[in-house]
Length: 245
Ligand SMILES: NC(=O)c1ccc[n+]([C@@H]2O[C@H](COP(=O)([O-])OP(=O)(O)OC[C@H]3O[C@@H](n4cnc5c(N)ncnc54)[C@H](OP(=O)(O)O)[C@@H]3O)[C@@H](O)[C@H]2O)c1
Image (tube, rainbow, N blue to C red; front, side):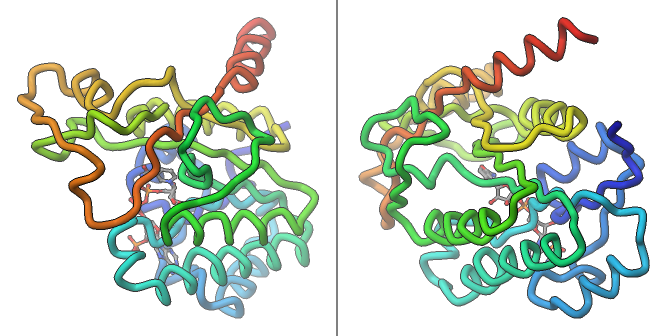
């Protein structure tokens, strides 16, 4: 039986963390000062002082793709070594590990990616998230969630018309992650909505906003064309869970 007080989430101050807090209010959300991914000893002491913790929902990361291109060392430290530290902690203390991964682990040349499709990132942020996934998979008791989300309203004046995605609002994705977490699912799940362009996504979440058009060709870093996800495994899980509720 899932018990909120047995869950610790990293990245609680972030966009996704803010939404998860509303859905699982009694979990533990240590700050990055108290529980820093790059400080294994600090995290181990924290876990020792909270023996009730049975699961870590790991969403903390160095998240901005352009910054990862400029500063790959920080991306390695937080997303690869930091997630490696979380995986070591979970293996050593027999904790379940839930990892928030990204649709960007895929190359983006076909779309509708299934959970077991081969991964081949095309930029440094995405490589660092795949590096994190590799460490997570050294543990047996895991749930890997690949997704894409953003804040409401849409934050930019223009949106890509030539990039396809399964992106949803952070609130919608948080609801799905909370559902998987509470059901104590294991394995890999793709979470999101139907394939659409980023521009269509932006108009959906901000219908009254003027949103211009832009191409991924205009961005000075490699961007995947189509990382939309096949979310049928999640939809089947949700349908079964709703029937049993
Ligand atoms: N946004 C997306 O479109 C998207 C898509 C797919 C996957 N994801 C993944 O989803 C997760 C959450 O993303 P988000 O957009 O909610 O993140 P965010 O708003 O950028 O917040 C990042 C979080 O990570 C924490 N953090 C960063 N470095 C840390 C460190 N060294 N030690 C401990 N905590 C650290 C930050 O803490 P401070 O505030 O204290 O710095 C903050 O809570 C990430 O793993 C991201 O890769 C995001």
